[in-house]
Length: 128
Image (cartoon, rainbow, N blue to C red; front, side):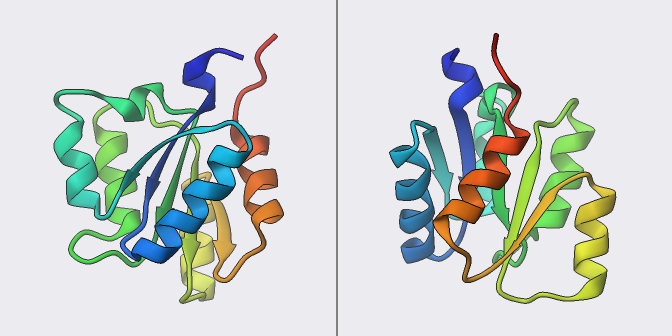
């Protein structure tokens, strides 16, 4: 599989959760680019556009500053966006509907590692 097909961007403000999710994904062969905030991630887009190379973005919905949903909108304005998985500890119907309209996956915290892996794997394009 091409390296770009295995890259995942992770945006999660909680350091423990960020480390746990990164460990789950790297353990399954994904290369992780992790960020603590939407703003940190956006700051990298002008130099090294890992969003364009990423097979998937895993993003917390409630981040300090810009929300995950707002980040999704802003990245979309820059061009094509890879598949997204929104993760949140604050589930509600409207949020699920917004994620669905965005064509994104959605996981409620806490979630099992295999649920995350299955969702990310379902969104990563198959490489022949």
